[in-house]
Amino acid sequence: ATTVTFETWMYVNVIQETWTAIIGKPGRNYTLWLNSSRYIHLSYFGPGNTNINTPVNSINLNQWHHIAGVIDVPSGVMKIYIDGVQQATGATTGAATLSGSPFRMGNSLDGGAGYYLNGKLDEVRVWNIARTQSEIQSTMNKSITGSEAGLAGYWTFDNGTALDVSANTNNGTFFGNALTTIPNAPVVSAAIWTNYNLLTDTLSFNDSLKIPVTSMSTGLLVGQYTSYMTFSSNDPLNS
Image (tube, rainbow, N blue to C red; front, side):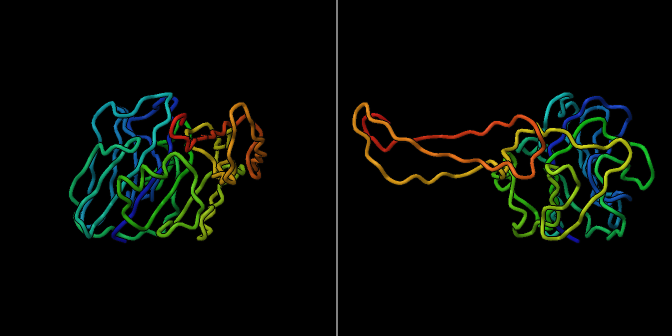
């Protein structure tokens, strides 16, 4: 493979080891790590171990961060974005070595045990394309459908499982103490995010209009969610 993009929301409670696994393929084929100096490390193995790092202290504990790693061999570049902002870039050194090892999240990316993430992951996405900064920014705060072009795997964990929501059925399994909780990453769920198209109507002064709104919550865990609605007017004097 020559192009890949990783995306995930990550919340770190505490850093327990020098290296904490985020997501990737064991053997350092396509891997994202968190260092105890609170920087993100993106690496892949091809002709050699190629990697880049974000600045020290670029990740805060007890705070959600969106992490995206891009490896684009045809363009000769790899990049790391934190919360939609580019924080690291470097040159690639050839195509990555293909690996038959299972994709892992929050567990050792060196093939063994350890390097566990003490925290949370949400909205994990893997693409077989190199996403641009604007593409990453446009979808980082909302769920996607799972049918987007170039999407290789998509795990929302909203239904209490590690099922792949994309069409590729790369379903996962929870191990050890991994479990799902009520999601609170800053992502608007597709299950309750709706674009309401209202019929055109004219309101007179002190008049009112009743608008029925129904939000579906199929597949969500029990808990409190927040949905946002924005109303705008085409009245040039009172918009």
